[in-house]
Image 1 (cartoon, rainbow, N blue to C red):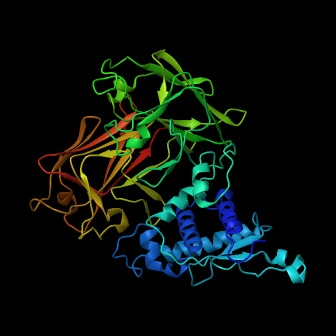
Image 2: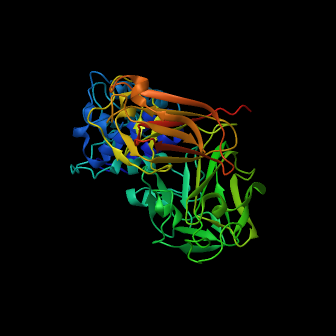
Image 3: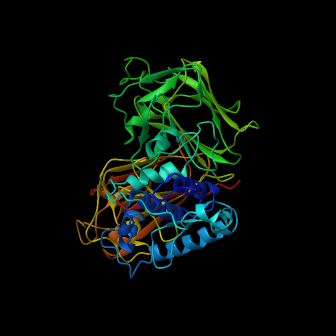
Length: 489
């Protein structure tokens, strides 16, 4: 057993809880658990107050009112119950148990009483592992790094584990969580604008690395995902637990086209097939033809599973010139449909009152600027969704699979240009859904939010839902959006 002040066993126990799946279907509990245990390791548990947790862990605004919003108390109660259930069953024989005393938010790491009772009296450890003595303040968003370090203990987590003193084997399969790999990244890691950690290149066979660190990639705020890659005759063999996954492949053509380093070519210059487990899933992919030269192009596939050998085999077949890949992302899926996509126009993610996670809109949105209005909408079911917004001439390019999708826009009016508010057009794949749309005209109040819904939209031929909020004549303002798979199997 560990001595007082030693955190190796405590960290291992945190990993065990996260990898067990006990919190996997409750992202709010998982996020709270990672936040408070990270504060424990940093020696800052004295700061674990309801307001601090609400703002830092759940993305609530600075004027959070605990009398109106009980998210912290509710989630803490649920987490206590979930941990108690875990240690009554799967974790019953673990050497350390994690508890959260009633009326407090700081976790306690307690020696398993059954282990204490069976140990010789002279060698019995204290029943409680002492908290760390390092009382320095945490660096900004450090706990978000821990969220990726601890939740996704998988083939890509070697770089995260080294940074936090944890051990990891790259060959270990994941346990239902995400794998993110930047092709051609030879060392270190990349933390994207949403706080997700992408590993260095691994699980590949053959091919050559390329890197263009100064090349401008259009249509993305995640430049580093597209500035390196692997090309040639290569494949990836990624260990994967049985199950259903979503696969996203990231491409940006930086050689051919008007802005490419080659200075020639364009559409049809480089075409190749993408195969999963030996089966063609994308035929004649032409990145320039779909997105243009030096532009981000994300392809998404659903119902992906490992082969019988427990490995996802990703390969490429050249048709004209050699294939390439910039990044690969594997996330848990739902049979027959894409996961619900939720985005807030805010700098950080948000956990809503139902425990759903909303990612920042950095990955799919371009144009405009993020703003944090002082007079945010309050007459809404969940004010946190409306706490920020994006203002301007806006485009969201969302990769999906063939099918039909519902689109929900969360809108409010902040700076009306007239008594009827601002007017803008709403288009999807170039087709007008609304002309001269006014949020204020629909809501009748600056404090009231609106969910504007569009049903059964189809992606374009490139597999994208391209949402455009175009001035007519005013700039648009949006708080959040959702995409729901409505495809009937």
